[in-house]
Image (cartoon, rainbow, N blue to C red; front, side, top):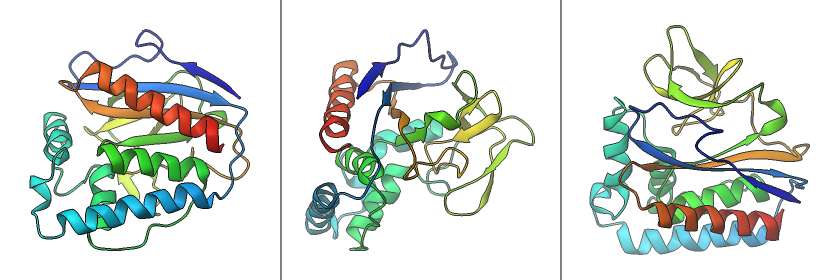
Length: 213
């Protein structure tokens, strides 16, 4: 397995977007089911359910950080929820998580644990360079929930062919499958998030991928 960290020079983020991002590529992975990671995800969900089911979700530590980020990006987090908050809501309601694969379950575990959007893409399906920007007129994609999402004015991850992901929901185009052998992984955080803490999260993410993929 080969892990390559990505610098800010390689992965341009528009200067006026108030966010930080940790990025890495991983090659030589094997995507398959893994009960250990899935059980850890279930344990964390049960913990959150017991701790937070009688607390307004906006009062849970970490939730407002990403909501503030979304609002700063011109997104209404009550209409287009951050993927991390969607996971948290599912956990608190006691809804069972789907076991997708070792890699995707790891991403969900990191996202739920730290309440930050985590995005994982099949890098073989990405065309050319990648950037974080706002969607342009007419840009949309088929999301994993089978809906067509219009991304005009909304934050997207885009390659030479246009948007392929977002911190809300990802596209079918670059989704992880059993045939995936290389992946592009990132953690999105508010601009005031500690750089050191974000690096720790990235390293935790990498460690789980190395161990279970």
